[in-house]
Length: 260
Length: 342
Image 1 (cartoon, one colour):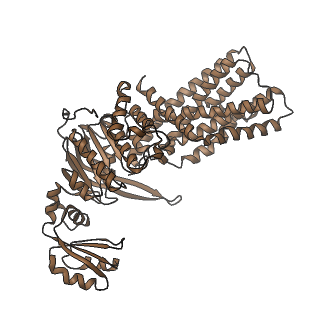
Image 2: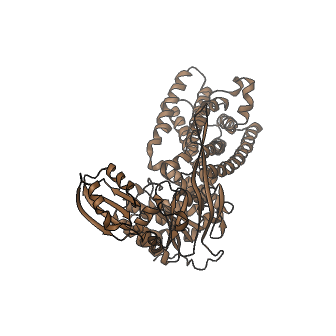
Image 3: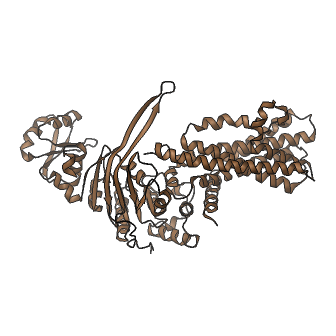
């Protein structure tokens, strides 16, 4: 296994071990989605069955994004709390790869949020949730997860510079729910917000997920959504790599990453 | 038994560490509307060299610049000025090459993933250091056996004692079989028995050919372990010599050691004003207080001691030969001229 993948996998594995060792994630990933689903389905109980699916998938997406944004942003803070940041920084591997492994792991746990919402909606609230194309649904879900992880990486780089970066992540949580179309279709938003929607990978991801959930034979639009999301994801990775290199050098100069 | 590679073959440079006029200044800003910029000089001018296979000690009070020096040498910080090479590589430019070849052991209970097992901690760092997968598990087992942790290797680290955590720190610092190990206060907070074990283990590593740079607060530890010791004060190396060489700086003095009760800070301060008292240290925290006074006057100072401590109880008074700790005390208090101490 190439060293880069080995580091990403190892960071992913360690992060998963921590999730398992510390089951408090059950609260945000199961209980909170239950409340969200209950509220969404109560509000839209008169709407059509397809709207129920729309709301449920949107809620799941919000959970995944919220989890990733919070946890990936805090990946650096986590190391600081453990007192392990200095040892990790002093290792020869790229810090970006370490945080990438953590980010993927966080997004995967965010995915449990979506699964919880789907199960709660289906089993408790009896919302018909037939997935028309399960394979493409799963594919678009995994790719969206990677896209969300890559976006999380960009935010993680800001934490290398300053611990006040949580203001940034907290402040961006809800705007991204709105402009990515998780809450309602972006067509309902003012035109000037559309550029912000289109540069977000999750916007295209949620569109692809909804298409695969509703259509057995997907059109070319589905593949375009997936393709654009992949391109945006690659751009996120490139931006994150650039930012990490810059902020790492700056933090070695300013002493913001390690305590002296 | 632990199989670490022989380190003697390394010869890419003549010295394991060369630090030349290292300086690190931190700029900080305070306030929101009226931003006030301040500069903190953590390391002013640090120069020293360490030979291959040497155990070099860096001692100094809190905030003297020991840890910053280590962080500059381990590439975690970039020097403001000056330069340093580690194993022949520039710490500013050859970051990855330096990191691959060194080990870092930071003291204290933190710095470990406590919710997972020792094996998981070791495996993670083996992967970060690119230890070949074919030897990874074997090396982890050998290191944990060497540190006496193998029987508890599958337990969560949060269940470990302080001493066990410190041994795990050391094991992790050796995961990449480093040629040079930086140890930042490895015995801090350990009980005497575990600290002794740790010192024995450090000696064993040097016998295996490792080069070690050790920082410590404990002078007896530096005296016992180190071939040479650098004393750092206010970001500057004020003395660099062998332990016996450093003791020579205070050979012109005696140490008057007083054990008593009821000694106050005010009385200690009065000793500092007495002519020809070069340094004073006091441990007033316990019931049995200890006061040490360095002076060239020796027993001639006794009458002054009795006068100052007339309201306190004196249990014992001894005139002693100075130790490395006394030399250190004088060096950090600044009563040895910096130039003469180098």
